[in-house]
Each structure stands twice: as C-alpha cells, then as structure tokens.
Amino acid sequence: MHDTLAILIDHWKADPHSTYNTWFLWDERLKNFRSIRRGIGQVVREIEAGTFGNAYRGSALETVVGSVAEQRQLFKGADHAFLWKPKLRIPDIYENAANQKAFARLLHSCDCCDTAEAVIEAIQRIDALQIKGLGPAVANLLYFIHPTLVMPFNTAMVKGYNAVTGGNVKLGRWDHYLSMREGAIRLNQAHRAQLSNDLGAIAGLLFDIGSGRYAAPPREDDAAALLAWEADLQKVREESAAAQKAWAAASESDATHTQVQGWLRDLGHALGFKVWIAANDRSREYAGSRLADGCLTEFPAMAGAGLEAVRLIDVVWIDPGNAKVAAAFEVEHSTSIYSGIVRMLDLALGTEIGEGSALFLVAPDDRREDVRQQLQRPAFSRVSSLGIRYLPYGELKKNMEPMRRFGSGMKPLLEISQRL
Image: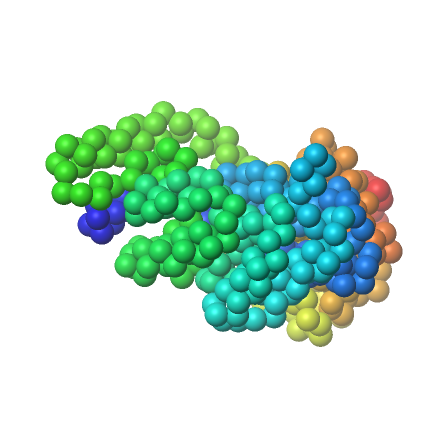
C-alpha cells in the first residue's frame, strides 16, 4: 500500500483543488493559529471567572469555533458539534457548571503542555467524565494549539482513514479518535518526506479521500482494483482542469487582498510614512515587483508580548520621527474578521505604539455589518476604547489619488473611515 499511497500523495499535492493547496498552503491558515489559540484562552478565562454564561450564542466559544469553521472546506461545519441541541440537552457544557469547568480544564491543560503524553492524558480525563455530546470534535480546537500533536477530526477524515487502513473508527468516541491518531501518525511517519510534521497535511489527505475526491489505494495486490484506482486519479485530474474557472474565482480573493495592501503601501509612502508589510505577504507579486519592495525589512523594535502577531498585520505605517506605529490596517476581503481584530488587540494592548495611532479594518463595502457585529462581540469588550475604524474598499479607491497628491498625516483617512 505504501507505494500506491505515495503515488496518491504526489497527485494530491499537484492537484490545485486539493486541501493541500487550497488550505494547508493557504497563508491565512498560519495567520489564524495565534488568534484561535488566544480565543481558546478567552473561553478558559471566562469559564474560570464564572462569566461564560449558559448559552453558546454570543459566547467566546461561538466566536472561536466560528473562526475555526471558516478555515475553508476542511473545517466546514466544525461548529455543528458545539451548537446547543435543546431537545437532547447536548453538548452538556452550557447548563452543567461542573462539565463546563472540566471542558475549560481540558483546553487549559492542552494549552499549557508541550508533549503528546500530556495531551492524551488530558483527553482521557475528559473522556472518563462521559460528558454528553462532548466528543472528538473538540480535537478541531486542540489542533490549533498543537498542530504537530493533535489531528483534526470529522466524518470525512474518519471515512478516509478507514478506507486507507481498513480500520473501523467510529464517530463520537474519544478512544476511536486516539486510535485513529496513532494510525495516522504512523502513516505520516512512513511518508514524512512527502507530508509534514503538521498533522493538518495527513488530515487533509484523508479528508479528500473520505469526501470522495480520491479513491483510497487498494490494500491488496489486486490488479483490477489498482487499474480502477488509477482511473479515478485520472478522473480527478480531468475534473481539476474543468474547474479552472472556479479556481480563478477563489484566487481572485487573494489577488484583491494583495491589491488593497499595495494601495495602502503606496498611500503610506506618499503621506511620508515608512511602511511594513505582513511578514508572510512580503514576497507576493504586485505591480510587476514584490509587495514589500521599498518597505521596511525589519519591524521596529518595541516592547510587548504581542510583537510576533503584530508582524502579521497586513500593513503598518511607521512614523519616521519616533519609529512608532502611526496606523495599522487589516485587510479582510473574505476571511474571518475575528482574526484581524485579535491582531489589532495584540498591537494596541501588547506593544508600545504611538499616541493617537489609528487602527483600521479594511473590507469590501458590503461587509460593514460583518465588521460591526464582530466589534460588538463580548469577547471584544475592550475594542471600543481602541477606536478601531472600518475603511470600505470603495472609499479608499475613490479617494486614494487625491490623498496621495494633496493629503498629509492621518486626517484624510479618518474622514473617509467610520467608527462602528
């Protein structure tokens, strides 16, 4: 099976529509790890403080699980397991205070540990309590804490794993999840050169098999099965070619994101600021060159624990007079606004910034309500004091050239943006 699985992995990595290319290599995946982990910490703090409440809607948990569910197709529906089912009274972590605290202990233990043994021990402790409706779907949260130790978990991954290994893993059981994790790690080790230490890669492969995009390689020396499997691979390649239009539409989002970053870069330079481009976007192509050309190569030294996340903010303007942040911009074309707000919080609350610094969420004109709703979440109760503003694409594009020619300082941007 190893040889045929190796062939499948090569085809999977070459397929532009596989989860490997659309999710695992997606820049936003890496940017969201810190924000999701921070959101998990907020859930723990609220439960420990007794302020979490007894409802999923409006809670910090809904915010962070919603951000996970937005991680493209691999986690679509990840929030279903946490939605309150009133007739079944599950998952029983909203009305049962003891179960709620046990859930917080699981998240906190995994956040504080750094070994597989400690993670498994924490899982076994929660499993022993047999909390109704609280099963291995929680692994989708734990993955964003320890991507090299915890594997994501959903129906398609289970189907893919069973198809590849001949296993009989069942949904909803922690012991089955742990056995699947062990088997997946063995598969990952056997194909480490093609995959990754990050278990998201093997999870994505199993997801694509389980969702029917690829057939699992035959487990026996069966020539007919091998031919059929190879025919399935060819069919996937043909489907990929036919879907280029859809792929172009998906990549248009990334292209637009880069274009807006380029506008802000050029405007910042025209207004006399030094400009920082997000560390993971610096090599993107823009206007025939790199997006980071002419920009700072090192982020200015400043105190604070949130600096690593700040380096991932899409565009930052630096005052050349005092080397402090004058403005910061998170461009939210189609991805989670939640993550951008978290990075703004890291900047404003976790580092030294210039007095009067302006923080902007830059988004399409039709996302105003999305921005407003996120800013009003209880998890962001401190946001109102930071003065984060919504800057619509349309206003930026319409006013960019006049601002470049006649503007100075931050006043023009403040006039075309909105406090929500």
